[in-house]
Image (cartoon, rainbow, N blue to C red):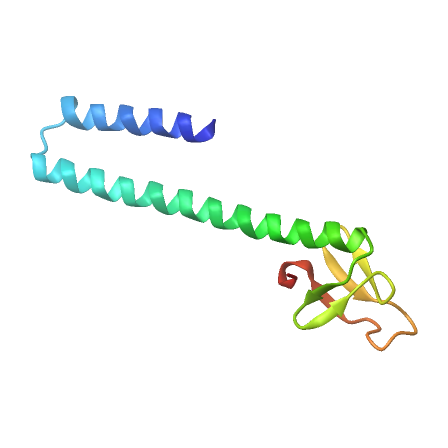
Amino acid sequence: MAYIYGLIIVALLFAALHYFTELSNSQKLLIGAVLLFIILGAVAYNKYNQAQRDKMLNAIVKYKQGKTIICNGVDVNADIYSLSTGTYTFIGKKNTPHYAEMISADSCE
């Protein structure tokens, strides 16, 4: 829904550029191209962030299901690591070889 509002705002901006300015056509095209580039960059950035977030949350779900996941080349499971839900970080449990080792869930596959 936010994209629709964004498109409406951009359309209004283009209408204002077209009807209420004394810029030449080439200047209007340049402004339009720059705005389009910025908007497409923002959309791509949002899609990338969403994909990264989904990947991390899928790893968290697998961990909570008792499966072993791989983070930075290390096998992570509930027997060796505990999950800090505030920061989505795996912390090595006491009496394990990975005691106090911290691995971010962002690095998991």
